[in-house]
Length: 523
Image (cartoon, rainbow, N blue to C red):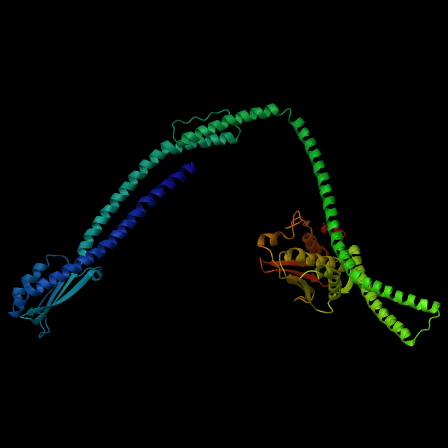
């Protein structure tokens, strides 16, 4: 009953809005237009009437005959629009002729005035002032509008009654039947069929509900037929799901093992690049040392032969031997020391990367040790490594992990950033952060850069732009995991195509203590 009443109210409100609002707007528009038109017509008639009267009153004024002018003026007041007519002579204070009627309360806004000189032989003999009001015409229009409003009200009343009657027969009663049928369906009472006559939309909805009732009956019959075998089906599906779950668990374990092996391979590959560079660098000082030793050996063989043959030795020969020996010793010492320094730096970096132990260190020294070992990869290329390092930044962290991150970023700049370039440079910079409790380490190149799609995915595992040409897609993933999970910092990539790439790391001076799950975080 409440829904039916609500629908009736909605229809009545719709009718009121649909008829009264447009009617009111039209009436308001007509009132404004009528007022404007009436004033325009009044203005036009006022000008014409004033002009005619000024010509007609010239003779009575000239003859100073008010009685002759009065009938002419009163004749104009047969038109209800006239408010006043005043004729004044320039030499008299009192008007020559004056006729007025009382104004209504709303007429002042609708009254217009017009003045004209009364001329005789081209000379002004009086001043005519005429006032007219549009109120009578507007009153007539308002009466018509009121009659229109009453007609609209009667039309609305009859329309509402007719529409409500049609709705009661064609909408409300069928909807009541459908509501009862729906409530019966919701209560599980499916035996009572729904019958609605007609072929309109509501009847089609009723037919759809009847089809739904029949479908529900068939579905319940099918459920009852399968009820006896349901437990067996559940057990069978459970066994299948258990087997599938076991297979998925084994596959996940295999994936984790494979990923762990790939990550370890990437770590060893990073260390292997350092080994190749160090081996290449050691060739030079060791080769120089071997040359010096061979030369000294030849000189000492010559000295031994002279001693064996009792050959007289001149002082100059002995001085040459001493001078060559000293020079060779100096060259040999410098080259052996250089080789020892390379081996020491590599040993420190390699131990840090393999043991990954926490210790106190100065950031600039760790960076320089890594650069010594990475520099051979840049040595025979047109690309340079420059540094801007703040000295004396003391950290308590994991230098091996930090070295691996720096190595990967530098090699990544060489392989990807400078691809297709004939020259370029990498700038490694470190400084204190804004808070004083962190350090900012950046690796910036002026290479080819990357677009937004690559930049967003650069840290995704197995994502690489060198797929099939040696890229594993794990280098930058390992970098991100080491920076965030081991070193406890953040890394940001700033890059655009043709503008180079800047990797900015913000690391705490004291790295967080690593828990047992930190190793898993790397994988």
